[in-house]
Amino acid sequence: MAHYTITIAGDSALNLSFAESISPETSTAIRMAADNLSDDPIHGVTELVPTFCSLMVCYNPLIISYDELVKALSTKLHDIGSIDLSVRHIVHIPVCYGGEYGPDLQTVADHAHMSAQEAIAIHSQHDYLIDMLGFLPGFAYLGGLDERLATPRLATPRTRIETGSVGIGGTQTGIYPLPSPGGWQIIGRTPLRPYDPNRKNPILYQAGEYIRFEPISPDEYSAIETQIAANSYQYHFSVEED
Amino acid sequence: MGIVVKKPGVATTVQDRGRVGYMGSGFSPSGVMDRRAFLIANTLVENDLDACVLEYALVGPTVRFTMPTFIALTGGDFAPKLDGKEIPLYTAIPVKRGSVLSMGSSRCGVYGYLAIAGGSLNVKPIMGSRSTNLKCELGGWKGRTLEAGDYIPFQTKGVEFMSNLGSHRIPNDPIYPPPGHEVTLRVVPGPQYDMFSIEGKHTFFNDRFTTTVKCDRMGYRLDGPQIQTVHGSDIISDGIAFGAVQVPAHGRPIIMLADRQTTGGYAKIGTIVSVDIPKLVQSRPGTSIRFAPVTVHEAQTSYRDEATYLHNLAKSVRRPCADGISPRRTARRLMPILEQQAKESQHESLWINSSEKERA
Image 1 (tube, one colour):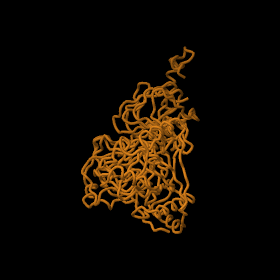
Image 2: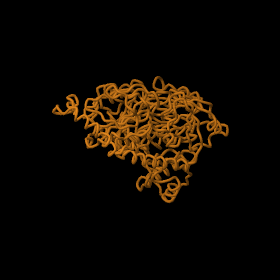
Image 3: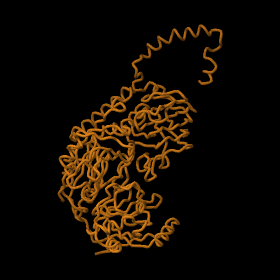
């Protein structure tokens, strides 16, 4: 079992930290710990929030104290197995980069000392593993951003970022499923709705799947937007094996 | 049977304890901002403690009741009036069919709560909760804040047997400091306490901060000296607990509350002790705030102490005569009055006057 350390997040939550940096192994260990704790719950645990390097465990301190929970966790998590990672489920996401949809594309390109076109090519050239959903319903945090594109967050977060915005925050990239305040550099936008409460699956993807960004023009963006509004858009999913 | 919204107030929503168990998919827990005031409101009308309430901020709503029940108002003071007469907070109050409860802007505090006896508002739970998640337009009343003309049914089960609810009241809750006073919030350091410099930690626990106008259900932004980190405040995003004190690059704390995002990428210097959060959320803009460090064990002791306090409060409230008036003594005092009235009205068929008869 992967080693973890515990950090305290107040009187009703704690974090199990599995590593200092993002890796598929860490992500796997966290997903297994989360699965284990949801299949066979500890009485008093109310929430499990898996993230890149840690798992937040929220609990009711009237039912289980910090010390009791720490003990229960170490008993439960000392032995967990491994997951087969060779089959990849891919969700295709068309993205219009730059312009009004991606106001920070140039900032990211300048930071990486390259042209906007190169930044787009690098961002869309490979698939991203969904490490976790969080921050907002359906906000996918994606592992595997090319290091050259890593750009610090805005010093002062924007008060509103539109639905479908694709951003870069530090070494991470992701899609905003709903309008929200946020501090990421916005490089593009997808006309798809990652979260739609009226769709059969309100959230388009889940942790463990891959996202493939496909660059589109503003015209294509408008065309897809119209199809989605008319409920005639065909979402594109595929399965690949190594 | 329910309430008709005449004036919606500002940010009036249906809330309960929150939507628990969906943070992992990215859903904010929502739920009441001031859990203590919420629990006391339900206690006063003998509701289940998880029953939903109306929460309002800045300006309270004005509603008409289409059937008799009991209500209790707690939290902020919005100058509540029932049919034009001012009514007290922290008291179970009978309302009649057609009664109008009107509220103004907040005189004290920020969030107010209205609980209705009999199990409260009859809205459908979504994902285990009746709380409104405004961002997702989910839960509560149509996933939104109330609007004029809304009609929200409430449960009326057993309300007619609750006449003794009228004696349920407690003195205004002493935990809230009077307006203008400094508020001290206890904080459990972590999870990224070590990312802050020695000066940063010193600033956080020794300097004074103030609440700003940028305070809402998502979070409270404070102003004050810059809290220094060692190597910046960006972290690999992790989970955010209720009351987490997040410090972005600008160095001023943001306290993450009911409608917070579930995860975030700024370092968190500490987490406010659960039982102190009501003091924060009821602080109006410009309130001085200080932070004091405590251990997780001390914080959990406070949590249990509050649970015991609220449990005892519920017991004392439910005694039929909370004010210590003995029914026998009351009857003895009433007797001569009734006899006198009976003597005066001997020539009338009934000594109850006609207007009272109508009301009865």
